[in-house]
Image: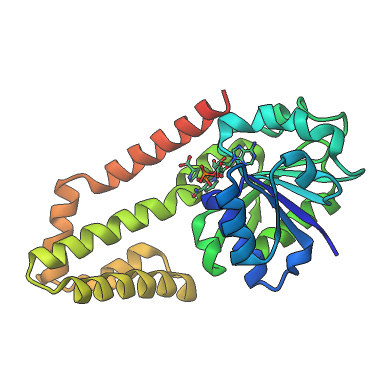
Length: 266
Ligand SMILES: NC(=O)C1=CN([C@@H]2O[C@H](COP(=O)(O)OP(=O)(O)OC[C@H]3O[C@@H](n4cnc5c(N)ncnc54)[C@H](O)[C@@H]3O)[C@@H](O)[C@H]2O)C=CC1
Ligand SMILES: O=C(O)[C@@H]1CCC=N1
């Protein structure tokens, strides 16, 4: 049984923890580390897993150590866990921006390090994780990371040089989609729909459109054209989105996200 320690069980750490349990992982194979006593009690009673106060005890003996703290806390944490790592333990970072080279420099020579950028739909088994191996990680270590993240969704291996760009699309991407959902719901309310109805309409439209895109494999331009009847309603709406430069706004947002990711890595 592979054992996994999750250091920092905040928003993303808890999503991975709950996602692994949903996927059938044994509670005994998982351990977390959380600083506040109330948070430790909450997590232990919600998930039936051992939650340690110290990252050192949580990491000790685990086959896989997942680093789920904020990027600016990650590098200081690694030398603390270094003496406690089991032989062959894999360190997997979820931290935006932090490179495998930066992590390797804080760990004993030869420690396999893997960088993962997950996203929050992992909570419902529909996550998108992008994965890159550090210089000491073997193919078997990479396969372990891929199979761990596949328990909570889709996983792809990419060159580490693409990690900041991937963060701009899939890591932060759910926030853009929820932003669009909020905008559609508010628009529906403005047009007179009850909020519950507007919410159902917006949610099902996002879900249905993503499913259609995925299931048909058709280019989004073709799918969009099929919605756009000549002289009809959709063309009127799309003209406004173009006038407001929504595509350009998405591109600029993705660039800002990529740049912030690179900045977090220093
Ligand atoms: N939230 C998201 O959608 C995503 C987050 N990430 C990455 O995941 C990491 C965590 O992000 P969030 O979960 O959003 O932040 P968060 O602030 O919710 O979680 C971080 C957690 O680490 C805990 N922590 C910090 N130092 C600790 C220590 N010494 N011992 C035990 N716990 C400690 C904090 O108390 C907090 O609960 C970040 O590095 C972020 O870049 C990656 C992809 C998506
Ligand atoms: O906002 C952040 O920094 C994290 C990384 C990707 C998604 N959330």
